[in-house]
Amino acid sequence: MDGLNEPVTIPRAEYQLLLLDAGAWRLLNTSPHVAEILSEWIEWAHRKDMSESTAEMARMVDWRREASVPTYAVLRERRSHYERAPRTPEQIRAETAWSWARVERALKGAA
Image 1 (cartoon, helix red, strand yellow):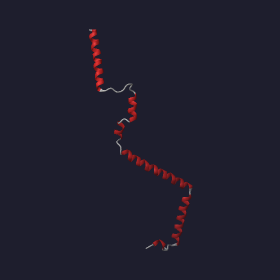
Image 2 (cartoon, helix red, strand yellow):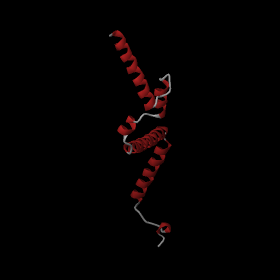
Image 3 (cartoon, helix red, strand yellow):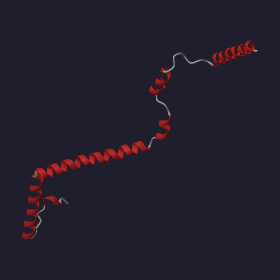
Image 4 (cartoon, helix red, strand yellow):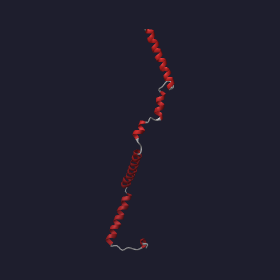
């Protein structure tokens, strides 16, 4: 049932309308203005699709949680502000004991 090669009979008026319509479409396709509008529309459709897909990807991430976690660069910058290496809890306790002992000696000397 290959109907593409079978001849079809249509009235002459309808044939003329089909010819005019086909000619109008051919003329429309050769217009530089239409080509410019079509290229702009294609670019717009591409940007719209990219925007929608980017928004969907952004929705998949919990940005509030991500924003609260410092990056490695921020941590490195924070560490660079210290002039000496971080102290261990034992070192902190020893310095505190030494400082209190110094205060107590100063208080005894004043009395």
